[in-house]
Structures are given as C-alpha cells and as structure tokens.
Length: 464
Image (cartoon, rainbow, N blue to C red; front, side, top):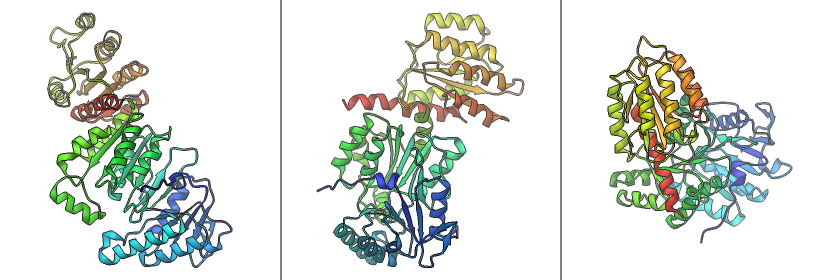
C-alpha cells in the first residue's frame, strides 16, 4: 500500500533546523548552512550543535529538544551511527520531517542495511517522513520563498527547469553546466535511498507547480512502476518530462545495486516503458542538458517540419543529415519565399531547404532570409534553425542584432548556432537567448535539441 506523503515541507519549509551545523565550509554541516543562507531562504533557521553558541551569525541550539517549537524541516548532517538517536529525539519533540543527507545505510553492506531498517521502523512508528538518506538534498529557487538544503558546491541560476536525480554527482554536473551555459534550472532534487519519498513523489509535486515548466530525470530504478506510469502520464500531459535511465545493461544493473541498492529495469523494456509514460528518453547527460536548453525557451516543444538557414555548405549538409536522423522533416520552400530569396541572394546561393546564404552573408542577407521565412513559411515550417559561421571578413555583431530583433515574437520557434572563432560569443549568445532563441556552439547539437523537442507534441498527444 502506497502512503500519500506531503512533499511541501521539503521544498518550501516554514522553518528549518540543521542538525550538525558548523562553521567549516568543508564540513557537510557548514556547507548546508551556507547554502541555506545563500539561497536567501526567508524562514527561521536554527543551527543545532552540541556546543551551542552562534554559528554563521545565527543562535545555535544544542539539541532539537531546545527548540521552542518543532521545525517544519530538520536537515540531518551528522555521522551515520548517531542518526538513529536523532530520529528518537525528533520523535520525542514532534518533528515530522527529516532530510537525512549522510550515507551509511543499505548501500553500505550488512551494517547499513540493518541501520536503514531500524531508521524506517522508528520513523514509521513516530509518523516521521524521511527524505533520503544518502543524498545531496534539495535546491528549490523557483518560488517566492527560495530554499536550498544541500552540500552541493553551487546553486543553479534559476528558471523553469527542475531536475530529479538518483545521483548526487549528476546533479552537481547539471548545476555546473547550467551556470556556464545559462540553462534555466532552478530546482534540483537528489533522491538517495528514498526510503519514503522517491522519484515519483517529487515528480508529482513538481508537476503541480506552475513555476516548473519541464522536469529532467536521472533514474536508475523505480520502486512502483505502475504508480510512476500514472503520475508521469499526468505530468507529461502538462509539461515535458525527459529521462536519462541508467542500469539497462547487465553490468549497469549491478552498478545500480552497488550504488543505491535498487533494481534496474532491463534495457530492452526501457524505451517502451518510458514511451508509454509519455516521457522522452535521452541517452546521456549531454542530451539532458540539451533538453534543458531547448525546453527552457520552447517548453511546448516543436513540430516535425524544419527549415535550415545556413551561410556554410558543409555544416548545412551534416546538420541536414542530423535533422533527418532525428526524425525531422525538411519541406521544400514556398514559392513566394523562394522568389524573395532569389531576389536578394547571389546566383550561386542555394535556394532550397537548407538555404545556403554563402559565407560572406551579412545582415542584408540573414535578416531578409529570416523575416521571409517567418512571413511565408508559417504554414509550412514548425521551426527555423540557423547556422551562422563567422569568417574573418564579416562582423557578426550587426547580424546578431538583426536576427534577434526578427526572432523575438516571430511566432515560429527559432534556434541559432555559431561556428568559428567567436570573440564576442557570450554577448552574442545572450542577445539571441534574450530574444527567445536557444544558441549552440555547433549545429549538430542544435539539430539534436530540435529532435528532442519534436518528440514532445507527439508524446503529449498519445496521452489523450
């Protein structure tokens, strides 16, 4: 029997106690307390340490029993062999929600298995809900009350993307790349051993949050596949759900058992299972990050019909191949658009799909080509992808200014890739993304992203 548990105290707690809080950043207790403060969490924070005193400017309690009223959430970052005593204290002081970050449970052999069984027994007897153990915590910056209880090294930049992961290291990689590449990630959940709350619970909670526009999953095992299917289908009918599912091989399944003690799903059944759930499957962390970039700006996904605008023949060829491999279609140009292009392009330019504007194309070619595609192609194309190579003799700045103005509010999803030496890459990419255009360092990644986004409308329709 599945017990319905409230995830709200773990995402938006009204007050937080940090059991094992400390000053040292290199300690788990110090890292968690600093991240909680850095997230601008506005509720009361009580560090709990037997030494008492003051920690990072906050008055500390020596134990949970010293608090005047129970904290809505107690985050536990102490040695595993002391954790069961804290559960007893939490039960005696009416603390109902514990986030236990340390390992040392079923993933740690016979002693850990026994400790986890006792943890579960004590918590259930006291009506306590456990997050974890053996996890890196939660970051949730999407609401008006941001919150981060984690020892991960950094916080994500914020936005509509949420990540739920059965690997703390993968969440750290997603946060790092989100900050480098301006991916709109605001919520990160490290699941751990999941003795009470599991992937499905967090997916259900985030599926009901308007602030969340897309959910990324790293999954190794699912406790209740029927419940996951039901919840995933419900969430995917409203927003994209993208999953990287590990452990599909015999050797990978053994690694899953060693990692979390879970039982993986055989690879032969993963594709069909996730498709039935309405979930987009991707093969790597890199593809999860591409999904974050694409769905961050085009949360509804795209249709299958793509137009490719390029100023370089070679990249146009390989990107065409990649688009077709992704299952996208490349319709011919509308006659009215072809006539317009022939009037503005040199004779040697290719007036077809892909359009080749030639290497020396400047704003006077790029701009009308994009504007014409928007004006004449709205009934023919579902998305416009652009390849922009920057040769030495062309200043890319005016082209970016023109394209960003045209793309903003275009009504057709646009994507942009830039290739070559890009001395102002950060500035150019930011300008395009501010106009709602995902940007890429290479055109093949752009095509892969389009392929991921094109899966969502079809999956969503299959859930009706």
